[in-house]
Image 1 (cartoon, rainbow, N blue to C red):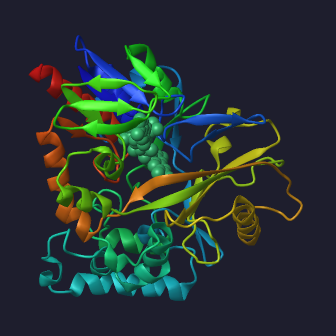
Image 2 (tube, rainbow, N blue to C red):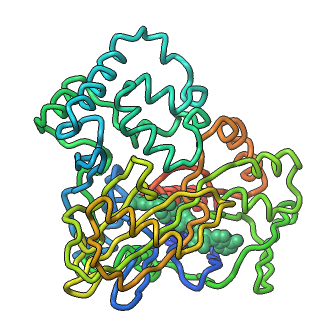
Length: 433
Ligand SMILES: Cc1cc2nc3c(=O)[nH]c(=O)nc-3n(C[C@H](O)[C@H](O)[C@H](O)COP(=O)(O)OP(=O)(O)OC[C@H]3O[C@@H](n4cnc5c(N)ncnc54)[C@H](O)[C@@H]3O)c2cc1C
């Protein structure tokens, strides 16, 4: 029997693709979906922070479009950066037009200086080069100063010298000089970034995606938390008392949580997993009694006077997510996993920041406010991760445990990747069985 732990998209996709093979899928929450969930509150539907679909793999796009046939809508991205009291389009490096001239000049001169640097500057392996060095080498001092460094330090909550650059290639587009100059002059001749358009369900929020997998999932047990694994005896114990003898364990829970629950792993592996770091995010969902507080899909905030790094407006991509005459927002604030900010303090800071940015008016009434803490939000790509992760995953696999998904592989990946990993692993396991 294959035991699958965690019914987020990675676990659901594994189960969905396992045909004619006995398995059971265990989920600690009362419902499936993991981070890809939505909930209703006083007439609003909120996702557990903004979750938009963008695809790089035709196969997974076709799968999702098949599961949600006729239920997805395509949107041309309206994402912006708010800095120097100005909105500029995302990504910053190719859209500086509209910023104060001295800022545009610094960004241009800094970028041009990177082109004149000797090639030796970037010979280090990505896991040895810091993210800060990558930014300076590839984008230059101006873009670093006015966006990349303040934004990323707010998001990651550590100095960028501590992060490696082995994850940036697809998330941070590196432009050509022509594109940077065009962007400074306001000339647009192509779309940039990993998601110039995105898909989103017309109704119901992003939860309709995991729900669409469920009819194809034969055996799922919700409210069942994995508490202990004896890897030698291949035995998993759940909080509700179930004890399962498995041949293969597919785990999609955060890898440090999994390792902590394994009773018989070498001490070196336990210590290595305990040293993996992540940043947490407060997802604050708001309903406001005024229509269209913004015309944008989402906005990035690099400057320190705004406590949030991003805010999005779900009713601008699915108007059914709230009552007529209202707006809804998801606001994201990073914090150290050990730091606790009381909800009232968060709400006060958000209100002040939103008014300062001109998004809220002083008379605006917030009719709904809900704070969720995403404990594992963004994993930190640091030297420790690069050094120990392959050994941890290999040791688990040697003991019949496949750790997949965004937190199972301890990486920075999307819904599409979680679905893709589940499918690939199921196909591999069926080949073997
Ligand atoms: C702030 C933020 C914004 C994002 N925005 C986007 C976006 O716009 N587009 C996009 O494509 N992706 C986005 N993502 C990424 C996306 O959420 C993930 O890639 C995807 O949902 C991961 O699915 P998963 O199954 O790997 O993990 P999860 O969704 O974390 O699923 C793991 C499951 O395991 C369960 N579990 C945990 N511990 C146990 C246990 N001990 N026993 C049993 N069950 C357990 C959990 O309850 C959960 O259901 C975002 C992520 C974050 C943090």
